[in-house]
Image (cartoon, one colour):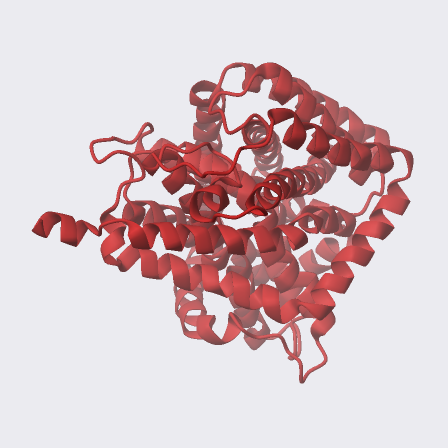
Length: 506
């Protein structure tokens, strides 16, 4: 067991400071949503314009680090004792990864993002075959290896210290275990607080976007008017369902809902794959795989400084990458919690490769169908997407058989994804503010759930998807420094562990 010589701060310090900060943001968002939106926009715009190079190199570094760890001799190390076995089956494990990681986002941006980049790509003419290929490469850059490598490394660091070194499941644990000094205590406490704030803001922004999409779907299916009160009503129903799920515990609520999510998502995707332009979708997936792998080194470090496209980069690539950083502590702690007993190699390959390939197939199916409609069909989908991005998924269904059935199934899927995201997010925040306990109390979860709902409502009152995206990335900007400290601490500690090859020789 590795313990720092530093004295861990009292539970109340992290919990109450985090609660005051996040609660204040929630009250601010409800009372003055436009002012909150303006402040968040100012903070993120400054960071994206001045530190774009830093964030792009940082996130690309996660991809490189994950690959190195997976295929090094340390890949055989188990996240836990050498005789530990995984708590969840591989299928349930992968389903929970998607539900906690980006499930609702895949539905929101599935057809919309490829259509956006196809119509208005960076540096070339839109609406062409070249634009279609670039659109899919860009989309896969945003949702592929970079995103899941960020999640994997964030989760690996926590899982290693919690299950291999029997340390608390806190953001600050790697820092406390690896470093010494008088300043480590305050730095570690600040890391825990920044982690909580990053998770809360990232989760609230994502829930706001999902709620707007549910509202748009209800408008298509049931004629619900797109008013702020409709959004608030959806959030309230979401809260009730979330509380029911949270009360059943991790092994029941999240696991059951995640498995339902996976079945429904696969059913919708396979329906579109075989009822839609099947050959075009499969050719798109195959071509995209080659284009993506071929373009990955250059795209991973491309900022377009010579084409004066810094606004595009800030609004898309950097926003996405920082968004994944914002979800890093949340998804990282959650993935760590469900991954005990797996080796580092199995963990990284499972968390990075399988979800990335599925995401590519997902976007080839939804985005490829949308581009097919624009290139070889009747067209008109792009206009609908640009008019209201929240309706993009349901607009796509209108071009397919059984549109109403698909819309109803998608609504159910989005709503369940939001429940599992809120459930797992609140679970993680409660862990982080309860001294790393793996079973936080319902009272703590209820307090954080109410704060998340308040910030979500404040974001919804602005009525803007862009503001929701901005809120989702705001907390990640300062938290990126904590991630760097975590990684350095992890590598220092891992270096001191006897490699499996040496152990076998001995």
